[in-house]
Length: 259
Image 1 (cartoon, helix red, strand yellow):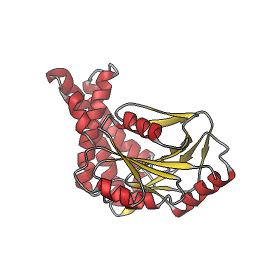
Image 2: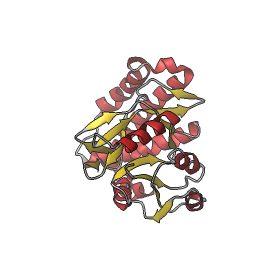
Image 3: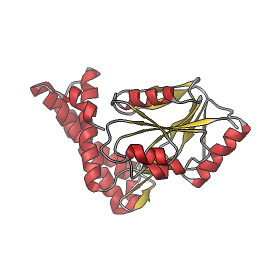
């Protein structure tokens, strides 16, 4: 069987880690890269058989890249602490490892739970993510946001990667606020300029994309709430870009504290 390292980056994830770690019983190694937790993250991780490495926060891309490099095995399963393999996906991955992987990476369909239900529309599903890969043939890419794995030969798996995305609406609002700050900073670094037309047009278009074009309405009231949240996050991103251009910003240093 091909040895696999389960790799997780975590801060204050004591409540999520047991579910995540226990969903991959066949991993030859479980590695948690932890940064400055104030809860029992380290204790819980070690109790569930994980090796813990403490590391300061470098940003999502850099942190996941570092965690991949610290693993003992070349085959990596990279999960967030609020994710877990479904039994079907766990069996699928274990079968691949037993037979010997035929691709350099595998994309997993991710299904998210929010507001009391699994969300299946609005662009949230299948939300395929490359999380199982050979680090010798695949690499992390990205910046502060939207980090992803890039590989040449990728196959798709069928079982769902389960994602408990937000604890509640307040968590969703807080996350949208943090991510819109990082998004505005990314726009600035990419040389993008604020425009009133973008501020007025992009948020309603985002709502229409999420709720109408991608059928978010089929998820009931949660689908509507998600679409409004997506539009508001888009509004915040461009409003904050305007704020940066007009008043300056210390977000670059503050982004280190966004975990």
